[in-house]
Length: 183
Ligand SMILES: CC(C)(COP(=O)(O)OP(=O)(O)OC[C@H]1O[C@@H](n2cnc3c(N)ncnc32)[C@H](O)[C@@H]1OP(=O)(O)O)[C@@H](O)C(=O)NCCC(=O)NCCS
Image (cartoon, rainbow, N blue to C red):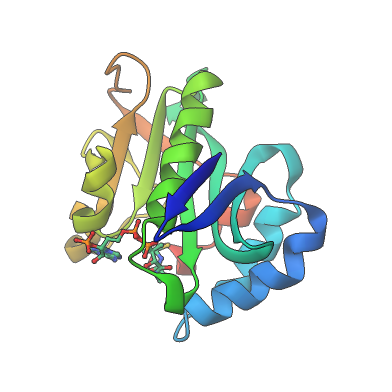
């Protein structure tokens, strides 16, 4: 995918193993007050269970987004619904607000739609994620209880004919099984 931003080209691609050092630097730049590198390293090492997309400009990494394949458990039974969790997303501080984060998210949603994923969840600022059609989700619980003030930040977007999973708990792979990521 090639998009034109302020007359420069941004390329959205699948992450390559040689991007990993640059990705760590990117997260340190985009999140100066939060260390997401351990999570990102685990996600990048987890293979097929993640869709890891990079944004590059002139061959240099400027953005990254991860979508993790998850499940839904209903009364402790795994359902066969394929769902995903979006995050983290990062864009170099100097290049934010130019559409790069939006392009990464949009491309990821298109890829997941094509692969039959039913719904995507995110814990993030509703003012930003509502731009992509995410809405607060009170039907599917996050893997760990959220602080009350974070509840509006738990959102989802249906990818297939507006079908929404009606009840259950999001089950996440081991990289996300850390309560500190959710509190
Ligand atoms: C959040 C982030 C990924 C968005 O990427 P981006 O390339 O800057 O975003 P886009 O250019 O696609 O969209 C920019 C718009 O979203 C808004 N926006 C960006 N982050 C926002 C946020 N957290 N809440 C609300 N709005 C936000 C901007 O104000 C801008 O609005 P405008 O179009 O009215 O000017 C990027 O700003 C970033 O890396 N931030 C630091 C890390 C972070 O918070 N990541 C998200 C949580 S995992």
